[in-house]
Length: 319
Ligand code: UDP
Image (cartoon, rainbow, N blue to C red; front, top):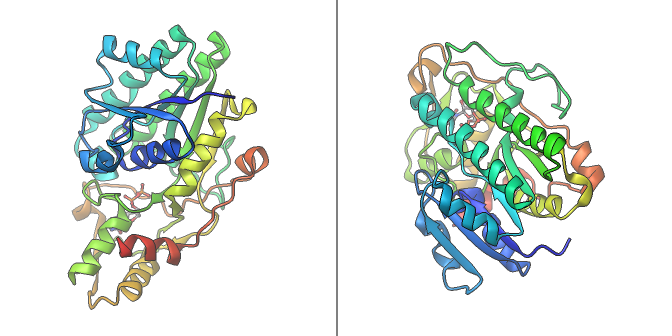
């Protein structure tokens, strides 16, 4: 594929700004739309000097604007979404509306203009699935609607169904990626993400807040690997109509993560356990483990995570 003009929704966010930079480095031109609800203008500040980069501060629900932006692009990367477990628990209405309405609109416009689209979904859709590794064809196991956490996974599942429906019914090339916990510089801890929170706490000498007993496990992936995978997927003709896990094959308990961050920062911080009820809402359910099966993306584009966790943390701490 020779596509060279990208539109990134949510392009001032953590993943979006890294993707914009990676595309520019590979010779693409990049348009970004972001309403700065969770993104930040500082994330794209260094890109503004590039003549192949442009940005609009508006919401993705601005239909006439979006029609024009989609028309000018060869490929759309749809990353705009409500993110962060804390934000989702606190603002379920915003989460559901943002995630579903924007995806509906973008898919409709992409179909109208015949523009391929990559949809960013999340490992959260696997929910409470109890397996060693999560495969794209596994069942999705969610909790009850009385627990607001699950509205995030539910809304993203609808988005995935929509993308799949546009592919099969209307022939629109859609690629869906399920991003597992992704980390790197510029990620903010404001919306709950554990690594920037722990690093910030450690550097400030403040207590490191481990939620629950800290035995829950996560795998963390370097943002550079993630954006590289997204670009290679949209450039691959056989990725269309499919869902791909993007993540790391090694996991760590959150307690061990806290200890590792303390060691790498040389911090004197102590670790404190915060009950889930206090950290989020009463009745909050956390996932005990979450590890991707990456055989599908590995087979298609040769994806392999390039960095181990200590190296990722060193790079984050160094910024
Ligand atoms: N977590 C924690 N302390 C924090 C923030 C998060 O112990 O200050 C835990 C959280 O409960 C979860 C894990 O770290 O078990 C990863 O949380 P994050 O919000 O980064 O991503 P999630 O995997 O929940 O989407």
